[in-house]
Length: 104
Image: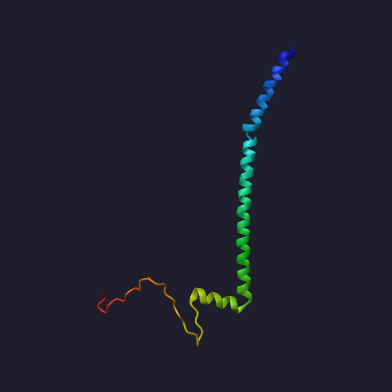
């Protein structure tokens, strides 16, 4: 009788272990969810840094002329009166040929 009780308890223990490791909410799923949380945390940190950089840039653009001028120079090609524009061409870069007046 004691032997049967021990066997039943052993089978029950094994069944519970199988459910713990493979069942819904088991250890595999917990590990997968932990990995997803870690990945999302990394993504959130990356986006937070990007937002902080954009916020700093917005504050610079709102508060000072230097940032606006720098942006206009780099993105729009701003040249002030009295300044001379120089364009540096890398060596071995083909220069586009102008079309003839015939349209060729």
